[in-house]
Amino acid sequence: MKQARSLMFQGTGSDVGKSVLCAGVIRALVRRGHRVLPFKPQNMSNNAAVTADGGEIGRAQALQARAANVPTSVHMNPVLLKPQGDRTSQIVVQGKIYAQSDARGYLAKKAELWPFVAESFGKLKADADFVIVEGAGSPAEINLRANDIANMGFATRAAVPVVLVGDIDRGGVIASLVGTAALLEPEELAMVAGYVINKFRGDASLFDDGLKIITQRTGWQSFGVLPHLPEVARLPAEDALGLDKPNSSSGEIVIAIPRLAHIANFDDFDPLRQDASVRLVFVNPGQPLPAEAALVILPGSKATIADLKFFRAQGWDVDLAAHLRRGGRVLGICGGYQMLGRSISDPNGIEGPAEAVEGLGLLAVDTVLTKAKTLTQVQGFERFTGELVQGYEMHVGSTAGADAARPFLRLQSRHDGAVSADGRVAGCYLHGLFSADAFRAAFLSNLSGRDIAAGSYEAGVDNALDALADGIERYLDMEALIKAAR
Image 1: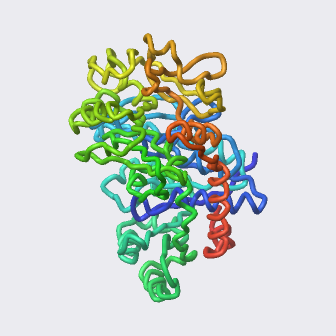
Image 2: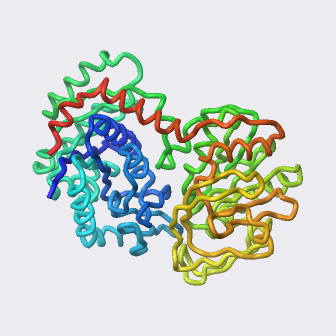
Image 3: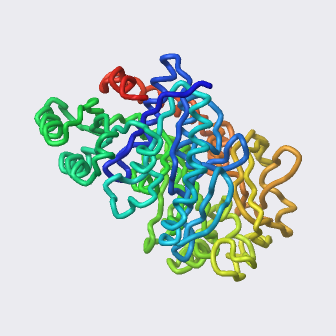
């Protein structure tokens, strides 16, 4: 049986660029003729993707699978934590809901999850030339060392060499790498093959002395300094920290999205963020919905009832009513669609305490959350433009009512969503619909009253992956990275 060579990228902290770096290394290896598969033993994110085998994984591993030109699989991210209301997380194991737990309870559960992690990793190793592994957070979080499956706990048990990634853009990169080395145990230090400096701006030769200091203090080799690559902005973000990135467009069509406490699948809006005709505004708590918005989108949520209460607490329900009085439009996606209805009921406590609440009442539909979870990749047509849409459904519950007789989408053999009688409020369960270029152009044209040219979002993502791989080949020592894998 074939056994792949493996290499793991761990970071000195969150959001240092591990996910993107892994995607770039994967694409670079694929272009060299290798079969490569991505793997992340444990992830925490409400930005998830439906896999080809009918489960869910973190969005970063879906992007990495795309970089590898392979279908997604639940084994690429066997443990996914999805934070929800009342300080708990849903634990998804090999694509399916496994349990709910608070943070302390999860620490006790980690030991029982190792067999799933080992099984998934073994399946990938048997089907690849290389498995590129991504860590989570930082291995220096030694208070979480017991039964670790995310970083050094995985690397030592699975015998996978580690490359540490430091983000120089946030400052303190020498201290973060040297400090990490100081906190690792001898068996963990033995797994470290070297380090990469990420997101450098300016003349990299100015950091030559920095590299010497890090290597002298740690004994690790440098695999190179990767500069800030503007193409990375075209790649979907997994972490909610990505919502803090400035808009890449300042177009005339203002679209506002309230930043819910448990916002989920916010990569739905990356195609809008990158459309030259759109100015996308994520509205932070405490700020009003902008009066100039032509469209307000209520996004997905991991805790719909809790986020509906949060929405009202910000006064956004009052702002939304004023927006509609001004002639604005409203769209809800998944949890946002559920909020637009007359009521939401969670009788089994699926996403929080068992309760029923009044919705915003903008669509004549009602939602009941159920134990069964819909996870499916779908395609179809938006009924009013007639344009093709495709994406995935990832939700609990069903929604029905009078306005569902005017569905927003026609998906294969069924309908999805609802539209109000005046046509200005709509909702659906389909994630990813704005990635369809012709639909997005038609939708924005209708919204603005002028013709909007169709861009090419998906092609832009692939071009960005290639540009990232180009940068990695140019600035990092790929031969040394390949040699370090085992």
